[in-house]
Image (cartoon, rainbow, N blue to C red; front, side, top):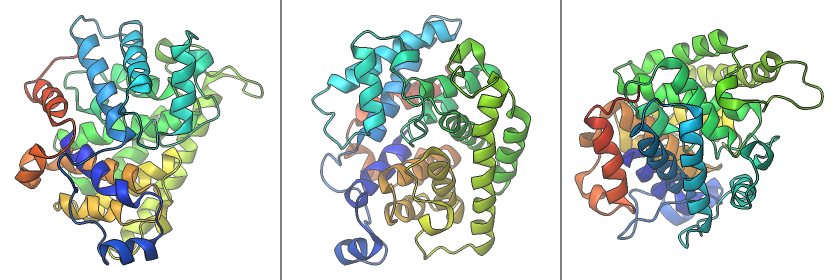
Length: 331
């Protein structure tokens, strides 16, 4: 959770800059550490905290089901919408969907059905961190939290892959094994539609059945994993990562480029988030994802100790992290 926020804060000042502007303003390596006290984050961390705290609410009263967690997340998302701190250039998809839910519309009507923006998978890491969730619940919940705002199948699939990457890294998977594991997951889940979690989201003109709906998302994720493999084979640490795997404004590219930044520096979390921040695309989300992966892999002690007292929302991040470090059982 802290790695997610560190990356977000580091990438926030460069989000809308090109590489020349980043180099002029911050030097060749980009921002070196989160600035300010507190070091301010963006809507990426704010919404990840909303997902995390909604999870904690739901897990207090098992069993963990869609019916249990959906109103928790809905309330947290609407609270985020109305918060005076929601002034960090939030994404239009999240705003429109949350406005619909705030107006009382069912989430299936409020969600932006054709959006696969990265706003769904930059916030999903908490679903990966919860210990003890059955596989079906982890997959279904990761897709559901995405579906509340982003209804495109690729947004769902990329969110599930992000959650599983965090889960596997936290469980000790070697970073080098991660791309292959994600590819295998795409193939195994290609026609699995989590109806208990998503209801009738798949129903729309031109879609024959739920399996065909979700397969599109997995196929697009498989395509970007090909680009990730090619980028890792080159192992170019100095170039803009967006040139290899995409700028990250859409879900599958955010996943791949965030992973690329992490996998280029698997044992150096600060360099991983710096690489995400020094990029021409959605730099706060890319560094946020890289920080999620690095934190899951290396733990809290890998980060500069002084950062934890300066990052915005440190108390809320610590509460969530402590709950899961103690082995909160989500079954």
